[in-house]
Structures are given as C-alpha cells and as structure tokens.
Length: 301
Image (cartoon, rainbow, N blue to C red; front, top):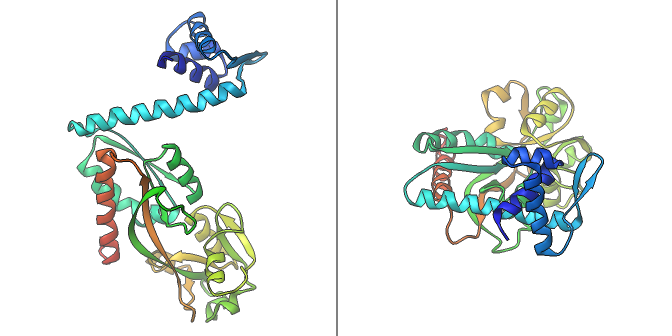
C-alpha cells in the first residue's frame, strides 16, 4: 500500500470530485482514478462511488480515509521530530486550551516561547475540555490545557500540574445577590454554565461539592468572554478565576461574592500523549508553560 494511493483517496473524499482532487495533487483525473482503483484492487473492496455531484466514500472508504489521515499526520510529526532532534527547530505546535487557560497562561507562554523559537508556528485552539481530549487522542493537538478531569483514566496521558485555580462567584455590579454569603442564598438564582450542556460545568461542580442540587441554568456559554458579557449585563451568577475577577477592567462591572463555603478550587494541568519520544518543541513549550504558571502564582504577571 503506497502513500500516493492513500493521498489520492484522501483528496477525492475531501474534495468530493476526482477532477478537483487531481488538480489538488497535480495529476490528471485518469491518473488519480487509476491510483484509487489500484487501492481498491489491493483491498478487494469499493472505496468510492460516483454520484451526480461527484464522488462519495463508502463505509469502507471512510475507514481507510480516517486511517490514512491519521497516518499522514503521524508521518508529518515524525519528520518534524527528526528535524528538531537534529537542531532544526522549525515546524508547528498545536495547543488545545480551555478559555481560562487562554486568558491566564497562554499569552505569557506565547511571548517567551515565540521569542526563543521563532521557527515554530503556534496554533492555539480554544475549546471545551472534552473536545481537547478527543483531539489529543487522535494526535490533532500536541498539548491540552485545562482543569484535570476527575474521570480521566489513569495512565492514558502524561499529566503535568501547572497551578491551582481559585474560581469565585461573580455578579453584575450592584446586583442584590452580591450581598449573599452562602450557596443556599444563590441556589435559585440563574447561573451561567460553561460547557456543552447544563448537566456539566463548574457551577454544578461547586454546588454538588457541598451536597446541593445544581442551580438553574440562566445561560450556557463556551467562552470566558461570553460569560463576562452575560454576567456583566444581566442577573446571572457566574464563576471566574480570581485573577480575572480581580482585574481592574472586570472590577468596573462585576462584584465578587465572598461565600462562607469558600471558592471552587481546581488544578490547571497540561496533558500530552504517553509517547516515549515527544517532539523537542513540545518539551520546550511545557517548560515555558511552567515558567508562566510560576510567575502568575507569584503575582508577577
């Protein structure tokens, strides 16, 4: 099985057209068709079927497509790793991070890492943690940043603790709920949930930690900016990292509620795949992450 045949299949499925796939690979349509037919003969199955609008993959074709994309990605990673081991610090690094990590740690890490390794192209993907772990498993991201999920299977990833996070409840400045001093006084208030569904998120975690039912969901967001906007302009309660809630800009619009139960304490971690040999750029980025986390914990940032 040759890479040229696999690349032909991948291009045909992604383009949905043999003509477009041939143009993308710089070969004629008959030549591309031949490459795919060779692969079909080798596997003794049909991978593509023609339709009125182009070509579509069969179930067998999609299996081969997903494996071929993963193989191409792994080969590209291997090439980068070899070059970096030889001292050529070029290539790309993809970081998946929750909004909280993007706001707290990523800016300083990007500044110092980018200055030290200008040949490494950094790609930052802000998304929910469950999506990051899925992409990390597939090798689509090199590092995932976020609070350590309690349900994570032991040994699946290499986990490095970066810093503790203190999450405090906040409301719009002047909101009567700012006078609350216990979770029970906030149990019926609408809360902003961060996640893909109201059955998850830090608000639910905080209440369940103290043996209480989760409060009603007033809004559902997947970004810190969305949470800030909703809390600052409405009646909802939200949870923010203490560093963000105490920022001079945030303080103009938000009040922090000092609860007798205390804040929600989390641990921000960096996760990588359990590989014996990681790309040198990954190890260097992790070192810069730890540096940024240390300075943030010391109040230097």
